[in-house]
Length: 317
Image 1 (cartoon, rainbow, N blue to C red):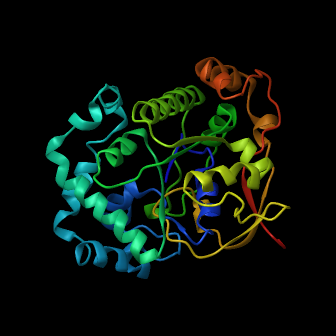
Image 2: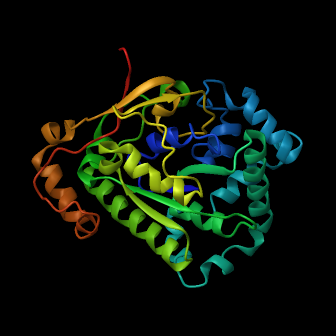
C-alpha cells in the first residue's frame, strides 16, 4: 500500500492508524531507509537508532543476511535515479518498462526488502508512506509487488501554512529544523505531485483511492474504511473510537513527520490555525498556483474556511 501525496497532507496520521490493524505494517518513508536509516543512522519511530532497532535488525538479516554495508552507497545512489526532476520522462507512455534497465538489481533488492518486512512483521500488507511519485514508479518496476495507491490530499492553503512554520526536527542530526518553503513553491509542488500521482496510477491501471484529509479527520472511520478495503481487508475495522481517539502502539517507521514518535492514546482534533494566522497575500498566491487542481479536489472557496487538520492530542493531557 503506497501512501501518496504532497508532504504535510496527513500521511503520517493515516499510516499511524493503519499500523494498528494487525494485518498491516506501517514502515514510514522506505525511500529513505538507505540514506537516513542506515547511512545517517537516524531514529526509528520506536525511538532507537535504526541500526540498533530489533525490528529492522531482523528485517535486514531476513533480507540480506545482515545490513548490506558493501552496497549501501550503491543503493542510495540508485534511489537517487528516481527523482522528482525525472518525472517528465517517467510519465511518458511505456516508461515503466523502459526506464533504467541497468537498475534491475536495485529493484530486486527492493522486492527482497518489502517481502522481508512483511515476514518479520507477520503482516499481509506493507504500508509505505514515501509519497514521491518517482518512487512509486520504482515500485511499479519492482518484480512481484502488488502496488495499491491511497492518495491523500489536503487543502493547499493549510499545507502551505504548515510548510511556512518553523519546526524542530527531532530526528535531524545536530538538532536541525524541518525544511520550510515559500507558499508559491508549496503550491506548485502540491499541484504537480498530486497530478503526477494520478497520472501514474491511471496510466498503469493501479488500484487507487483518493482520500481528502479533511474528510479523514472529520469522520475517520468513514474515510479510512475504504482504505482498508483497498488493502483487501474489511472496511469496518478502523481502530478509531467515535470521539476520534486511537491507541498507538510501538511502531517502526523510517523517516517522516515527528508525529510518528507518538505512542499511547491520542485524540485527533481540529486545528484551523491557518485560517487565522495565514496572511492574505500568501493565500492569494496559493489559490492562484493551485487552481484548477484545488477545485478538482473540492477546495473551491477562495476565502479561508475552517479546515480540519490532524493534530494529535494525548488523552488526559
